[in-house]
Image 1 (cartoon, rainbow, N blue to C red):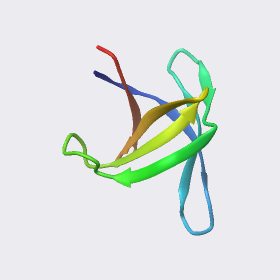
Image 2: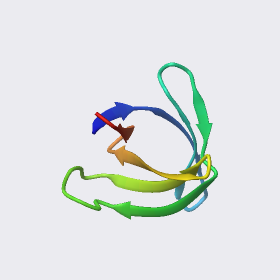
Image 3: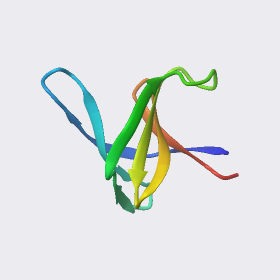
Length: 76
């Protein structure tokens, strides 16, 4: 899998909880995140950030926040 950097539009509430709302690829395509299904810190040892399980177009996808950078994994 390849790691692809993306831009993410987020909402941060008064408690500091960050919720991703949409993903924008470098080519300008934008996908709305229908729902955040799960959030976990460091689910494995491949990175040290946060993994969001999100619903996009009715399909579960993983979105990663590693320090200040957002990315998704794509098939190689």
